[in-house]
Image 1: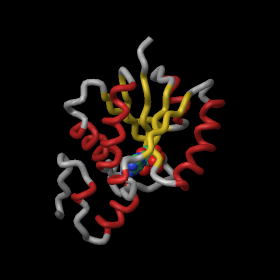
Image 2: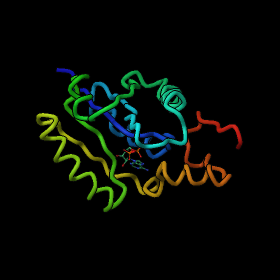
Image 3: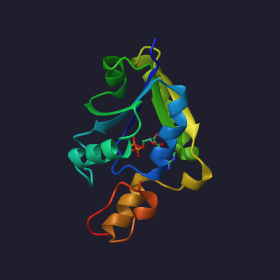
Image 4: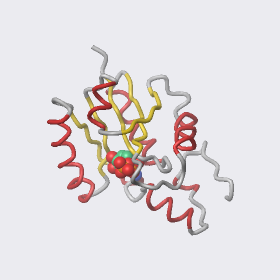
Length: 155
Ligand code: ADP
């Protein structure tokens, strides 16, 4: 049976922390679906089209990676694409506290859906999309945190 995993997130925008995580997960799965969770209640800095375009660009050369988006519950999306594994990254204790509850809920809602965690490498543990958005909003240069393929117009 094909081992399919979903890596869900906002990816607003994708950072080198996300890319590192996907690369480290690749040997473990047959297919990884990097999926943007669309939350109509949450406003994003970059629109869905832009976020998907960047993801396509960044993972263009990874045949095992597919890009998609979904609305609603992550667990339901996993069922739809027949993924038994959910991928998340842990940077610190607050990530752990948050992710622990979500993964326990997803295990029930997703009928034994397993969440797999990797701890971020020290070089990436300070990087978050939130910080990157703040840098961009403040007119700073976020390029050290972004994959090479992403060029922001005002940089
Ligand atoms: P969300 O909006 O669901 O937090 P993100 O797009 O911010 O989604 O992140 C998706 C996943 O990637 C989360 O599990 C998050 O912990 C992980 N992640 C984000 N940045 C890093 C990083 N620098 N190192 C390791 N994992 C990370």
